Amino acid sequence: MRIGVLTGGGDCPGLNSVIQAIVLRAAHYGFEVWGIEDGYKGLIEGRARPLRKEDVKGIHFIGGTILGTSRKNPAKSEEDMAKVMENVKKLGLDALIAIGGDDTLGAALKLYQRGLPIVGVPKTIDNDLSATDYSIGFWTAVETIADALEKLHTTAKSHKRVIIAEIMGRYAGWLALMGGLAGGAHVILIPEKPLDIDEVCRVIKERDEKGEGYTLIAVAEGVKIPETGELAVAAAEKDEFGHVRLGGIAKFLEEEIKRRTGREVRSTILGYIQRGGPPSAFDRVLGVRLGTKAVDLVKERKFGYAVVLRGTEIVPVKLEDVVGRPRYVPEGLFEYTDIFQES
Ligand code: F6P
Image 1 (spheres, rainbow, N blue to C red):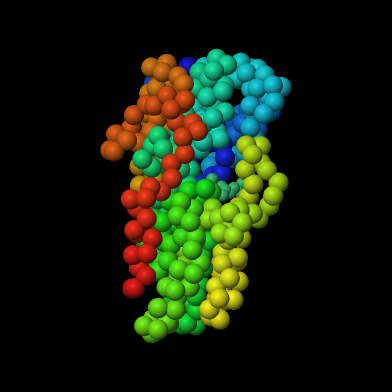
Image 2 (tube, rainbow, N blue to C red):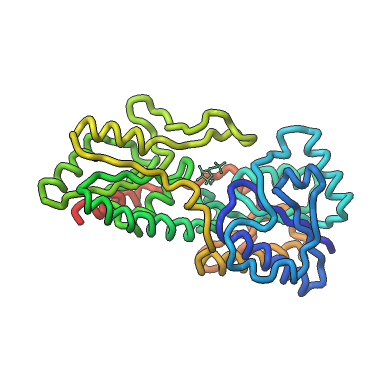
């Protein structure tokens, strides 16, 4: 049995833990693993290399993906789909494990429907896949955000400023909410809850009157501008899956709050730092468990499934029940967005 493995979409900490676990479990069964370079782009171009145990030694602790990644969508053209099928044959792959978020797993589903024996592993720092309780990379990113916010407290406090930190997460507020909570942000703004700038200014004024002297705001990049209902966009051109690059809501808020309160305000985009660095213990363990179970599914020839975390168990779920089912922050968690207002 020869298994191909690829990582697609944005990188995140924990991908290498999955890759190493796949290689180790496969070796245990006497299977070969080939690493596809740069996600679906590499598969379309037929770029792959063997991954032996010695090739993955120590990668468990390293962020990113040793295989490289891309936002290439093979399902965009019939020609690319045909090339994928052709290269799978040429490389002698009996199965493919695709590690990725909704876009990568969506393409995996289309390839499966075309007859490719495929298993998915969910990853995304955004944590916006409803099929899994947590996706790899999320909790590491939360820790990075918490660390950044902790640092922003001291500079905001020293200068008695309002500081706004813009946090990733695309259209979901999970990173801003959990990162904001862990980092003690006084105001947490998420896409799921319409932005009320007057209310934000009221909190700032109240904190000033109480002598707190500063306010730290965590805003998700997917928060919409109230007047227009539009997203703040850093780059309008779309990637192959149809996504624009979000960014700029913190700057917009900086100007608005300055104008409305006369306060000294600064904003900062946490950006790609949130995707970098070594995985947390949680993501390492989750990565190992998912990688191991993905190979087990291949061994059982249970294709068209993804392995996901449900409670404390890793379970198989049909790809069609994973793809296109985004998870947003439910109303029940909204009360935590202002828990540190009076701290
Ligand atoms: O999906 C992960 C993510 O980091 C989002 O939070 C962010 O909006 C997007 O990827 C950035 O994408 P890119 O790496 O293409 O700029």
